[in-house]
Figure (cartoon, rainbow, N blue to C red):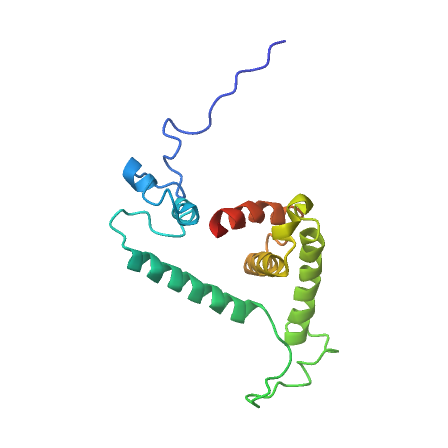
Length: 176
């Protein structure tokens, strides 16, 4: 029995209807062809694709994205230790390491630590043949933070084995 023909589920124009693939002219597609990481950021929708965007516009968008990322890190990655400057003492009946309250700072910290342990388990096995890049402490830390923040921001999905392998090529494309 002959296999059934494969029918395309995409419209005639493969980018039609897909929000992450903007329609652009050939000039816009190749504006930064020599700067591969910038071109990838444009293709992924991180940077604006308009040919009228100046370098200052790209810098502003990048700075805004970095500010949002820093805000996410402050909000989602928990440091349960009290500040040394003495500002706002925590309620020790709720915020202590032995507290059973799941919403306490320490409860969130321990949940994040469990998630980090799962992520680290996968990161230690990430592309061992490319150990010179993916096994460096800087790269491991970056991958860990990105995966943790994504999982904390999307708790309905959580962390699944293999997410690190989806992130790694994006890191390579945007880093070099």
